[in-house]
Image (cartoon, rainbow, N blue to C red; front, side, top):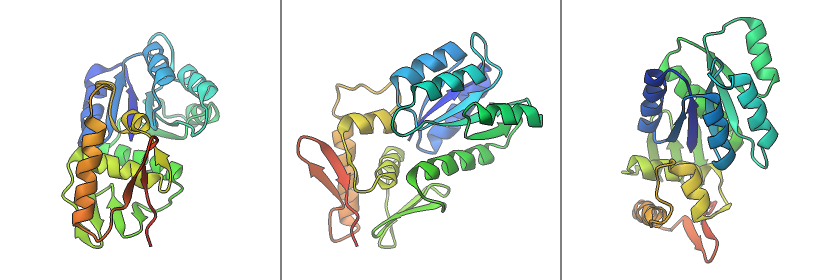
Length: 226
């Protein structure tokens, strides 16, 4: 899943980004409102962690513009701000934020709220994703097939999480690159194909079938096996 962190305090922005990357998310960073709008206009983010007090363009205007450009699956917006009044929270939510977290916050709570927003998009209410005999727990960074733990790299884990959030859907290499890798990924490499290949091998080693199928000319699909 791909996250945009928008925060003008560079040390805080970079710390949030590092922490989320350790959880397997692809993370981009913007340090002001204009940069945030520019990045959101060209990249398809699953979650935006958005500070309210920003230079050049404040967080309220940023979320307005994100909502104006939303097509298809909406971007989830988590506002991060030192403004803790009820009126500020109401304004942020009314303008299009999905959740609101007041600074200073515990990073464990930030991770939990990001997971909750992503589950909302996946149509799941629980903390664990299950598709057939595959089970993935983002909070524990644990993935299993038929009860056997899958020895996944962080990128393979992130890729499996994205497949499991959209079971049965055909996902192109471009879509996977957009949501599982960050802006530093080279679109002209074969990184998506190689990572899918290693993930498929590990899934096959843990079961008696291959749940990720290639759809010729279109991409890949996680089959909903019984």
